[in-house]
Length: 378
Ligand SMILES: [Zn+2]
Image (spheres, helix red, strand yellow):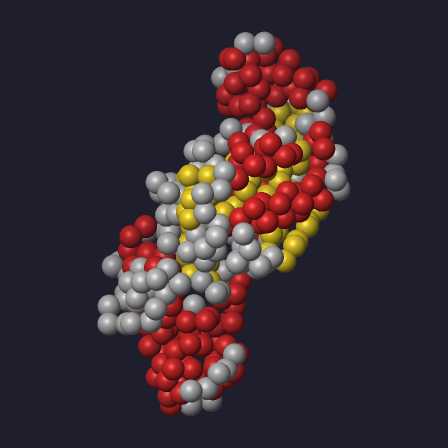
């Protein structure tokens, strides 16, 4: 089997995936591959159990019905595994983006890297045992820090100090014999949105991660921006002049140290001496508590201006905020107005809230594995 034939096969599968359902004739027109070759490859893919016939459509010219082809959702499985400071979350995803299985294990972020590596293998083995192993294509490992994507090495993480210089790709492959790919956390999350979330139909959008930290993943001209260390989008560490909050990264005045949930709570504690949770802070803001109102308004302003800076830099069609951002529901109009007021030109950028929960990173890892299978250029 020549390499050209394999390339044709991949392209046919890619187009069937992208179109959802398509006839052999349309594949022939679309890909400019000989009809006989299309027929042969389709037969092979059907025999392998990857695609199936799903009804018919009328041929526009001849009026004759021709059958449509579609990928069988559970014919291949893709694994995503995210290491976070709190847990390891791993999922098996099918072609439709449905979670077939999930395993989660709580961890201690100060554990030695050897222990964490053992726990990652434990979680993955547990997960793999739940599905047919021969259907698994690959594993996308989602790292909490800076990664060498090419060689699959976790280099350094500001939030997990002992997680450094880990040959995680090699470790997983040696233990489980499944090809493994490595990606940064924000890049994985924006991939989830691109494949199965609100970013599906968009070529330029940004996912803003929000919660304990702040970060972002950028899709520009339909591709993920990784950067040289796989950490493009460290939006939480842009500096705010005139602020002295100390960040987890060791520097002062980072957006994350001011506007993340812990950032907000620390700020209120410093200014009022009160230890409150975020809902209480927002309640007090609404009821007109002067000190809280002053501080929160300032933080909203800093956050909104930072988002406008992002928009001015990348000109996205849409910003998708993390699901955690929902806590500011009552203040969306206020925040979005402030963002728009600082945009260099006022175009109708969309603001959306992600529908993904805690699996968003792991799903992104699985999407990475799927993109490698389909040879998608992402
Ligand atoms: Zn920082």
